Length: 322
Image 1 (cartoon, rainbow, N blue to C red):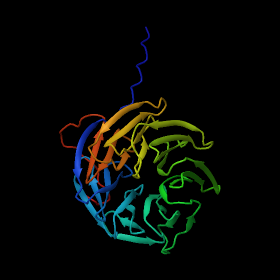
Image 2 (cartoon, rainbow, N blue to C red; image 1 turned 120 degrees about the vertical axis):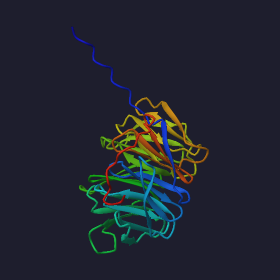
Image 3 (tube, one colour; image 1 turned 90 degrees about the vertical axis):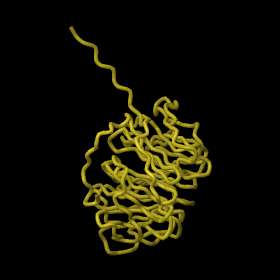
């Protein structure tokens, strides 16, 4: 007698609020998981950058060195370094364990909106309101950028790097995908200023949010629109979008206090997460688990698929940061 195959489980969504962290650093401009998802990083309007334990919601370290509000941050693959950018026009490379500034990189002519390491953390890529992406060698003692990409005709609002590919979104309404190995550039036009771009996990698609309150899924090679997701409000703020861990759902911040979550294939709204009464400024999806971070005003919220057990949670160390 053969038994029927068990039905595949519906993908879980982070619908339960696990904890709220009061960051005490002014308005939180961006929130990001680190590479393994055990820690979170918060960027403050008070010029500070903070490292937190996700499971306990406790602060582990504060990084001070920017002259104005911090707008984005990324952690290296081995958790030993951070890079951050700010309205002060600089990019800073930090030593995680000591909290010290390893390098302060100057060269952008305006606010730096976004920053990311390449996979080996040998290069930092930063995008600015000055319309350029600058590439910085983290190991060199030279202080100027090793490459400047200046194809955009307006500010760079968002960038993502994946292996040899760089994806940028600009206020000029264009999504640019650079193949850095082949020296090729592919451009897709979205008729609205772009606020956030990201690659799908499988690397075949790009996700783009823009100020016409629309998130679009595009085929990376052909530029064909595969999906369009609406209902949220994004008219005047630079807000994040992302894909869930297995590319099953599209998520976006909204100015109406919710995170919107759509089924990627059907385009239907699956979940509307009530974060609060203000603008949801930023979000970050856990690299391997069903967990979501959101930022609103001075707080960060941690969301999970299941309500958390109250037992003590064990966690690993992060390069002497705890």
